[in-house]
Length: 313
Ligand SMILES: [Cu+2]
Picture: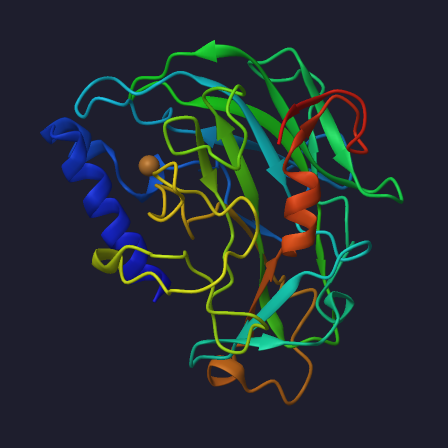
C-alpha cells in the first residue's frame, strides 16, 4: 500500500515538472531523507564521541513553485521530530513477513533509549538560528534550523548535520531491525500557518501509520485524491501535508517520511530462541511518533520546550 502510494506520488510529482532532467533526478532519494538511513545498533562510526552516530538531514529540493515548470521555491528552514516513548505513546508496528501489524507492546520491549534519539550538532548546519526540541521531562526529541532562504536547484541539497544516539535493540525481543519514522517539515515561508499552508509554503515528510490495526486508521483526507488511492478518513496529525489550501489533496511528502533503521548486531546480540518471524530471521519493527507528539513538537518555537517565540505552527 505504502509503496504503491509512493510510486504514484513520484509519478504525479515528476510529470508535473515537465522536464526529462527533473524526471531522471526526482527519484525516491530526492525527497527529504537522512544521509545515512540504516545503521547497526551500538555503532559509533569510529569517531571520538561515544554513543553518537553522525548523520545529516538531506533536504533535496524546495517547495514547488506556483507556476508549473518554473524553479522551485527556496527552503527557509526545517523542523525535525523523532519518536519519543517516554512522554508520548508512539505507534508501533511489527512485520513478521506478512505485512505490518499494530502492536500494543511497549517500546521498551524493542529498543533503548526511549527518547533522545536525534540531536542537532551545534554548528546549526547551513542555518545559524537553530535549537533542540525537548519533551516536558527535558528529553531531546529533535531540532529545528532556519532563518535564511536557500535557493535549491536539483543538484544542491541543504544538509543539516546531527547525531543520532547509538541505539540498542532489546536482547529479549525478536526484532532484527527497528525503524524510527521521523516527522519533518521543510518551510519555504513561515508567514502562512499550517491550517492553510499548502505545498508551495511548506513540504511535510510526515508519518501516517496506515497499517493493519492502528487505532483510528485508515488516516486520509476529507476528499482525498482518487488517482493516488489515498485512504479516505481522518487526518493523523495536524501536519499530514497538502497540495491545496482546502487540504483535500495529499502533498508531495504525504505518507513519505524519512526513516532511520537500526539493525540488530546478530553476532553480539543474537535472536532469542523461538523467534519465527520472517522464516526465523526476526521481525522488522516500525516506530511512529504519536500524533500528539507531532502536533506539540513539530511547530517551531524559540525555546526547546515549545515556549518563547512561536515562529511557525
Ligand atoms: Cu520530492
